[in-house]
Image 1 (cartoon, rainbow, N blue to C red):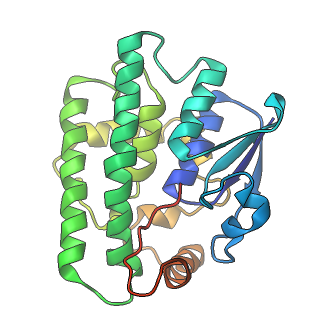
Image 2: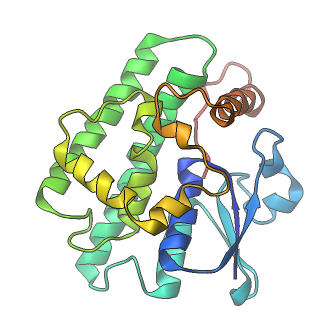
Length: 244
């Protein structure tokens, strides 16, 4: 049994979608980021960095894993699935996973901060992060023009990681117009039962895929994000928008 400590964010979904796709039994522990539960001592013993997601593998003497990409690799290796078996295929999957972690996630996270959460509108910052996110989408588009999935013909954790972020592009204010291969890939992943189930953990925030959404849960998400910005960064600093 896996204990999953998570919140409804793209990085949190990376872990829950992976668990769903692998069919592993897991117990959800929802972390209230607004209440700063991720900073409590009990959680810091699992993830000393105080970020979600994190897991504890009860079947392995309560072994804790933090950082979303590390969790995905651990679960894939635990089951022998969602990572190609051959050396080159495995490397390609990890490369595209790192692409998400070093590019897609941070850039879309910053776009979210300045486009959605920052109290003042600073257009140069909004433009920078939205434009860079779009450029990264175009990198995915080129890859998916030559390959069904990011690592090749095989669905992998690389697809899960990138999809969990790219699917929220409207929330970040980033267009996917003209990116036909990216759209084909997004549609294919959205049809997978494991993907559909995983993005509803720990709650369903479907508004994050809709730029104009105003449902109550989404409004609470925005309010919470602003609270985290106000309490989580030193005075005068710019927030990172990152959780795990």
